[in-house]
Image 1 (cartoon, rainbow, N blue to C red):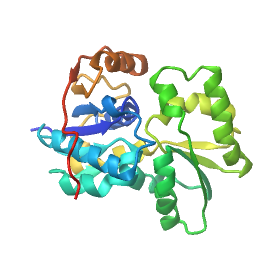
Image 2 (tube, helix red, strand yellow):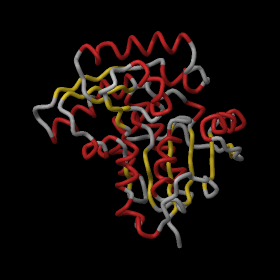
Image 3 (cartoon, rainbow, N blue to C red):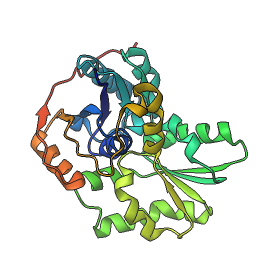
Length: 267
């Protein structure tokens, strides 16, 4: 039996993770769960995120998945222990996957407020390079602008310049896209950055970590993922989420409206 990947995020951000996974594991089947009812996650408290994560994990456990990918950096930074404790299958996350992708010594991180407050990326980078300089920048406006399709707006241009200025002024050599939504901004961000600054997508590391769990040699690497073996689910506005998938992936999927437990206790 082929493995079944469970993957969750608050919205379309996790699609960037799913896409990179399918580039590497082209024939993999997956269940993608978007918690659109409670987006955005990045301004919620740690307890809220942990409670939400438990409900999502419980739902995915019931789908008979083989491995679970946490495609949300906020959840990874605040609730990965809860996810691993309650998941019935092995778990891979984004933050711990970034270490092998970073070679520079001056690193910037763009992430949600909750993720930057946790300093999770700083801890991972410093663990492998204690002499590294790391600056983390919260970007609360990015996810709403992405989800509403406004990345080409003047508002995006203004907030992006404000978010990037401290990193540029600090002479960073690379920037980690510390929210799974942010790779959708890659071309826009590159327009505003010095040419030498490299953008790092942690989902590349996550897809590599899956090799040992699902057997890389068992699958055919494809240049263009088809998503034909993906079951898309959302906790609200399934039609709206299907429209956003179409915008970002160029496909027209059916999206199931599902219900997850909202009042789980994490203690």
